[in-house]
Length: 268
Image (cartoon, rainbow, N blue to C red; front, side, top):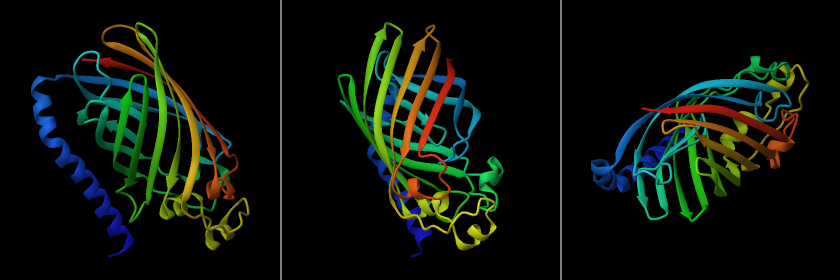
C-alpha cells in the first residue's frame, strides 16, 4: 500500500471511529437539543504564506448549525478556515468530534519570493479532535489531513491548553497556547526546496529537504461580545513562532508570524 493510500485510509478510519462512538449520543441529544443556524462573515489578516514577512487579508463567509442547551459551552469552534470543530459527543468535560475545513494551499502569485517554486494545491481538510474542559480551563488535541487536491497532503497534529474568562455578562476572553507537529509530506510540500525549484527560484534559494517535526509554537487571544441575543461580534489575534526545519527553510523569510481577525455571527 502506497503512502497516499495509507493517509486516506487513516483519515477514513479516524472519521469512522468518531462517527461510531458518537452516533448513539448524537441521536439521543438531537431529540432534546435546540437547533439554530449561524450565518456571518470573518476577515483575517496574516502572513501571505507560512513563513512570509508579507501580509494579506482574506474574507470568508461562515455558515454552521449549533445545538445544545442554553448556557452550555459552544459545540462549534472555528480555529481557522481549515479547522472548524464540531463536538458531536459530549460527556461531562470531554468532547470529541470531527474537524472539517478547506486549505487554500499556496499560490506562486502570492509573492515574488515564491517565483519558480510552483503552486501548492489546496483542498478539503478532514480530521478529528478531542478536548477536556474543567471550570474555565481546557486542553485539546487534534489531527487533520488534506484529502483532495493532492495524492498525499501529509497531516498536522496539534495540542493546546487554554483559559476562558467571562469579563462581563456578554463579554468573554479566551487565551490559548500550543504547538503543531507536521508530517514529512506536509513539510515537503510547504518548506522543502527541490533542485529544480532551486534552479528556477527568483530568490536563488538553496535546495532544502524539510523533515517531520514540531513546526511551530503559538499563543492566541480571542474576544467574543454578544451584542444581542442573536448577534455576536468576535475578534482574535495570534502569534506563531516557526521552529525546526520550518524555521530553517530558505522559504521562511520570518519565523515570527502574526495574525488577527474580525467577524460577526447572526443566529437564526
